[in-house]
Image (cartoon, one colour):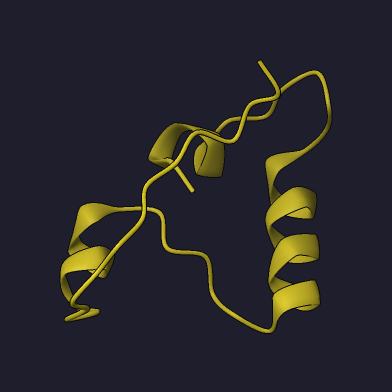
Length: 53
C-alpha cells in the first residue's frame, strides 16, 4: 500500500478503519514504506496499480 493511501483519510472513509479491516482479513501487516519492503529480502516483487481505470 502506498505511503499516502496508508496515511490519508479520503471520501471513502477513515484510513485507520480501512487499514485495520485489511489487516484483519489478511492476518498480515500492511507494508507501506520502502524500509519495510527492503527488509523482506524477496527475489521477486510485483508492483501493480490498484485502480479500476
